[in-house]
Length: 352
Ligand SMILES: NC(=O)c1ccc[n+]([C@@H]2O[C@H](COP(=O)([O-])OP(=O)(O)OC[C@H]3O[C@@H](n4cnc5c(N)ncnc54)[C@H](O)[C@@H]3O)[C@@H](O)[C@H]2O)c1
Image (cartoon, rainbow, N blue to C red; front, side, top):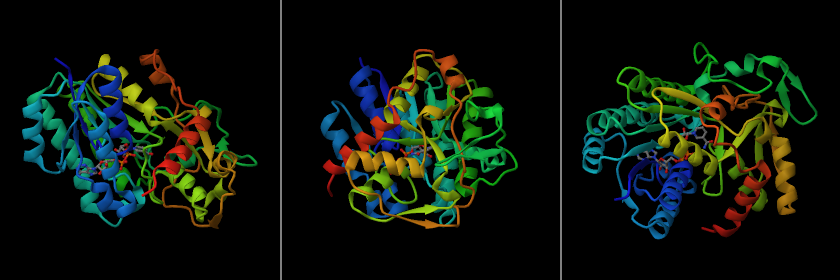
């Protein structure tokens, strides 16, 4: 009998990668939950049906459930029915800019949806590892208070305490989060609590920029994917503030799925990890333009708006030392250049 994995947000970037990795590499029978809410949040360009179809076509034994994680009774019934051996929760309203326009949808999805799943897990399968995709936005804009130095194409930390990046001990309190960051904090703390209070094997993965060829990148979410799309279509990419030198660490969705698999194999309770590409996979927008131009041979068309996005990080990269210490067999396998090469290839093939 195959082990059973339940993945929420299965048609999204991370969810779909997790489904494929666990089904193909680890032999799991995978149940996906997704209602294509991304298309509701972001319009037709955020549509994830193509990815759902791909999973149905390519993964043996894949079962899709058209379920909204806000549907408490529906979530409980499904978890009780399939009793998964592990749960990976990636369904979310993922954009901080979008959240301001839809505060109830954002909170109900991100915070209450997570609680629905946690409680269902506690009732039906309390021994099963529960992996939650959190975000570095739980730190709010506090990372912007770290002393910075300006380099020709990027900002970097001037404070040697952050030479390796932002650790998990960084404060999540008393900073500006955006409504999205706040709803994700609620979920993050609840996932920790189900670990600490009830002893469930839970973890929060506070993602940096998660990316890869299966992202339906839109202006408000999925910056590298959207940037490549703009380059290929010769469309203008708009930079918001910080001189285009703002830094993000980027991790390929495959390396995210590999870390989740490592946690599921050796779970701990109530853990928190900063899951990003680390310093080696960090880039500024200006630097990303250069890499993509080299890959496509096309110049990047862009405009600059002085106003930065509210609460946007100036420089953020994750300190990966805790992940590497707890799971020494895991490491980043996909470089930034390789990841971008795959994104270019995917957009070229994926014509609507
Ligand atoms: N992509 C990133 O850069 C990034 C960075 C940090 C954290 N994260 C987190 O990782 C997780 C996954 O992000 P992603 O980039 O794969 O996002 P995504 O939008 O590609 O995938 C999320 C999926 O969840 C589905 N969904 C949304 N609301 C739902 C609901 N109410 N019921 C059922 N399904 C629903 C969407 O249709 C979508 O397919 C999210 O929790 C996000 O906050 C992502």
